[in-house]
Length: 340
Length: 258
Image (cartoon, rainbow over all chains, first blue to last red; front, side, top):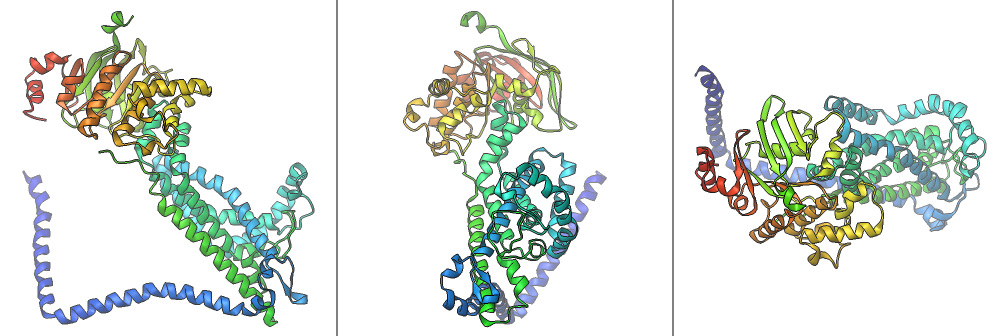
């Protein structure tokens, strides 16, 4: 009896307070109707303006980049994108080597990061004991919080020397028959950049994939279990195949990250704009070239060419990100029809 | 062969209790389920009938808090014996769920053969034979034979449920469990499933959980009435529905509660 009473007590208190508050509200509304409406309208327009500021900002950035690269566009036209000479000394600029460096380093990052991320996401949603999930997720998110410059500095002072001393010689020994792993290395190189990028995109691919896997209906798993599938078979036929489109979206999102990443890459890639088959040789990316050469770009054309690199980078990352968002949006799953 | 097996038990359940944490969902249930017959499990929501069904193919173990006591024998084999993997039990005891759950990324054909492929059967001839056979048994063949490679989700709700039945039949289980297989379907699709159950019992032992009293009366040979985790009454369906021994059974089947 007393238990029921004590359970009801907070309820009564709540009721009383709610009523008082309600009266309060009504009073203020009555007195300040005009200001209230004006305030509401002002609030609406203010928030709308803030929201629109994003569009304006992107448009302005695009415009600035385009107008800044005017000179280079005039001089080189479309050849800018396909010429492989990046030669500031002779004032000739072609973006192909840095586009090459961007694409190759990002691909390496994906090749390394995708298996790690997807496996981690599967472990977190399908296999890990409950007590372990939250700490693991926290650590993965912490990895994303490491500032890029610190990761790059660690890469330059710890990872690259280690790669140079141990991993690269070993790779040359075993995989040296491929042109990819031939030739000398000096430490900083495209492969090192790809590895740093991989570390940076694992968190995003993992956490988006995890969300996707969590959205796979339990009934799909049960269907597979009921057929006598093992845990791995359930993951393969019921979970991964259901989620593959969404996971692809997560991967593309990671790619968008990797393409534009600047600081860490600049520190470990070696910054030589060239197209060579060996991954042990230094390279440059769109972002790293801008970051690295901006201060020394004295000539107008040089300056303008860097702007055009920025324009290309913006275009590519926008397209990739929009593509990723669309993929993730359409992943309401290949939905099972509701029965009727 | 069929005749002398008709009366033998496919499943022998002895003193079965199932717990989820501290909650005892099934309490000390013992019954024999006849081979090549339909046994219906009825009872109000939360009476433990679904848990009982899931204990038969060890699906309840997917809940990490689940624990069981007692014994279930499938044609004499103790399915909870230490050296028996749940995977093996589930290959012998198929299951159809309340909501149809075909694999949406697979075609009709692939959905039927997925269980066989899990068993390592790759021979195209065997797979296609078994596809036709299973779809025929599930009374779906005529409706889908011209579009076997169409996505499974292009089918209607009732067709999807029959596809799930075909998928379960394709691995040739000894027992087929059905957890309210028609509760999400319209009357026409429901009557198709019921007809199907009557055909399937020639070859299969079927255990069906249902909320629908008429369905139990129409489609089953034996009926078990569960209430609050206990087996209240078990017997031939005609007896349960016409002259139940227990008052609670009578109240439930006549619609006075539940």
